[in-house]
Length: 79
Image 1 (cartoon, one colour):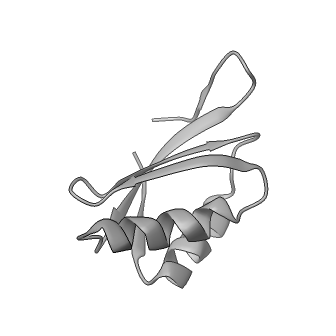
Image 2: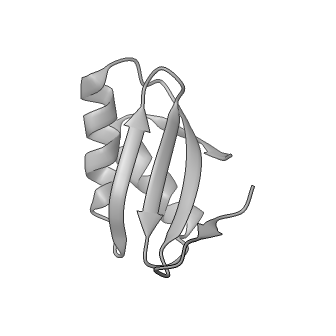
């Protein structure tokens, strides 16, 4: 699936992250990704491993991977 652009010009992308199991995990992943330039919203869901990111422009997957690694988890890829 490719990133979706909404009417405000924001881009929404959904990523799969392995290893999240609780709210603390969700917070760690969300916190690291939210520090990336242009990110306006992050929602991580441990039960599905899905992380939805809204940003001003498409993000480089390498930057998202690095942020997820910093949080202690593994980016599987985009959904």
